[in-house]
Image (cartoon, rainbow over the protein chains, first blue to last red):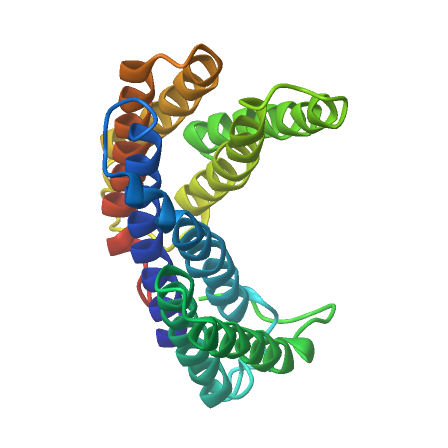
Length: 138
Length: 125
């Protein structure tokens, strides 16, 4: 598994824990009295689990497992692009979460835009690797 | 495919069908409590269950002695996640507070068990 995939997947696992912790609090809040302001965190729960966990996991695994271009250092495409996608996605999740939580639409728009750029960057890298044959993942 | 993965995947397929059936009921004017159940059957039961099962199977080996990590933790993640989700399905329409809290704790523990077992398997080789 390449280093950038390790970062993607470990970050995804961290978001899984954060998102499930928040979700557990929200669900428990239906059963016992918890601060009413907790429900403001619902969009953050969505953001952490849908983008931070699921999208990020898929990106990390795709970079790892898609067909490669032989055994050269550039076998998985441009690694710099994958790191850029990682930075954009994680910066985007944090900014979008702060934006929706703090009712700061500018933060939310910038964060979501960073997520779009992360998706486009990843697509650029994976597009050429979406083909019939390749070498099995390490 | 290890037996635990087969359990994860088969149960996730059942949740998949149940979640979409819940969507049909919603569209036909189902009750309000159905919405969070339908969503969580899909994203926790189907998607997360499938990921947990496939990751347990496909991720790099932990060691030659324990290729998939601690099997007890993996089984715990399966039992806790699914017990918690099923409890929520039962508790949400009844609005039984302590059952919802128990469901929240069980699902959270299931995720913790999965992360603890999977983290060291996210590595180069």
